[in-house]
Image (cartoon, rainbow, N blue to C red; front, top):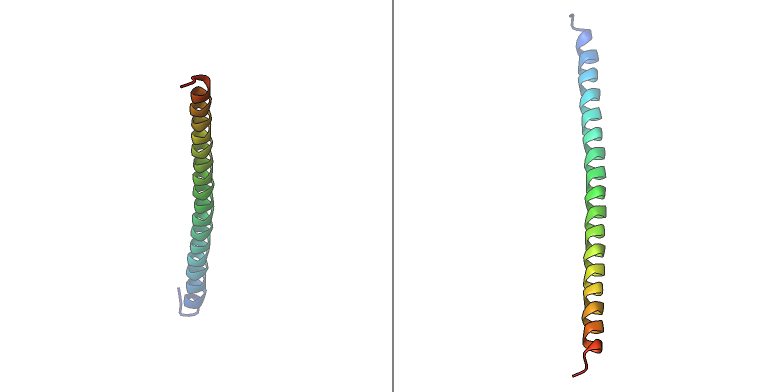
Length: 66
């Protein structure tokens, strides 16, 4: 390898580094989006379960006159 090959080798190394950083950023973005979607679904399921529980308690209290 002579001196003229050094800039070319450096360019290949840098382009590979940039590709890895871009792929890592894309992966992090997709994982963050997946995590946010899962958290929203869990919140929605918890809220619907709480609403069903309140409705059941209300129906039970209405069925038993005091």
